[in-house]
Image (cartoon, rainbow, N blue to C red):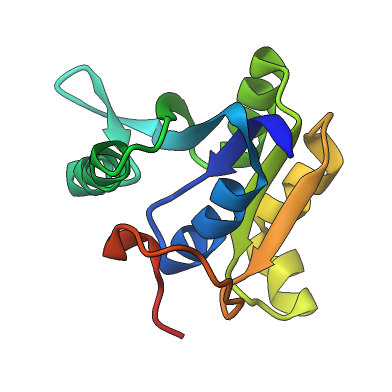
Length: 156
């Protein structure tokens, strides 16, 4: 069991599939810190403000998901950190280092190795950047967890 578990989320089904693993790894006196990188386009500005690569609805969904977990008695924190588009892995690695995290749990999207190279992969970059172990959970993985909020289960 780990004291500080970082769960990296982008609000996707693959990230949600990794959450039960994060929950199963945290010690009774430990904590889960959900980390979401609010990606900003470096090249664009609207009315003097940076353009967001993700929508406000995504942040709202993540907050609602965590509120449901808290209502169920889970201890979970949220860090939403702005970062340049394409630098989510660096943001997650930096937060994990700052928190002295024991492990980072992240979902994978199931890209082929070639697609991962061409498109880039937060998980692949985390493997090179993070100073703690990474648990990469395939999107199709399933784990038996106690009944809890339905938002943490993903359809396979």
